[in-house]
Image: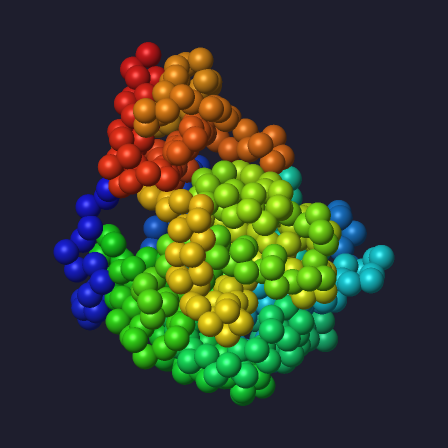
Length: 548
């Protein structure tokens, strides 16, 4: 396990706060050097991210990415509006200004928030899908300016094409290469106009994001059941983009809910420190969630979202903060029982490093599991077609279909996952932790953990050529190895690592893209000691391949 910082879970000291004026100055004054890899545009699983303080997220990056996106739209024939949202990170507003200067100069129809507010990632997905429904041309797409739950010094920029979900690598690769060419030529070819002119342009439209999304929630959740049962709900947006959404939701549906805080502060001074002593709005971390966990007795169920509200953290009175895998399993068991209009063949999408309790729940309810590599983009087509009733990641991101079996969002939606916890409580009389406990009493209790192990860049490259023969494992945790996987069984796509399974345990190992470590995900259905045995055997086997 990583070393836990002595101040983890504690309030933030003033000396730890980000210097916002310095951060914004660096955004405009800093000049990235495209010869330095860390200063180039790089689209990971959730867009381009970085800080202006180390020239990884500056005005030049956003101008270059925005022009590259306009080039892509023109080539792809996308003539509909671009829905654009920002979160509450300090670099979001400057980046929006830079992006607008380029989008408007290229004649793109842009939809910005009617009140210059903040827009969650799932709301952008919902807006894209709503606009495109029934269309055969003139499709809309979207941009969310967010680094998700990353620290206050970071910025992020991600693109959602007309399918409403995270852009696939075939699109982001094109945008990334074009943006870096613009950086290399000192932004030659980037069309741009002044921000003052751009804001007044006829192609910039003020759009009410809140009302349509809030009104539509009754089509994906049983809001009447939540209201009728009087479930006592606590909600903490963690100062993120969902902050202005909860009061309209509470008012419209008459919920017995309390908004813990509604302040927005780009230093996020109201957070408690994460495991490593950093400020991080990670709603799946018990350290970042310490305040809401401390209030659990006041509510039947409580929840939080990360800064762009695509992730969820569920706190129950009975058990505190739920492990994300546990809530996914409880959600699946509940939804497939209480959504009679979903297709009988609609499946469950899960990532290859998610808990095997999901497979056991699926087997119990007679539904297929489609196991994919890490990344929500792999679930987009299934959610769009209704082929997936539910899709979720071990990192607390999920979405599911409307009650009639049609698509809701094709990106993660932390708002509906929080409200689902309230619906489960309302309709079953048990909170999601209690529902999960009843499942494990029947199906076995999982012991799951992810650890990071050190690995040099040379050692990380070993994963590219790793095979079952090289790993040479016949047993895992005292059981015969059942399978060794290099690709996700659901779509046969490589996931950049290796997974070894046995009847009562498994592990998966994959290199980190950003740090000199590799990640080991492991699970046992026996005990914590058995989990430790699996982790130790996994590390020993990987270490042998490093030594060869």
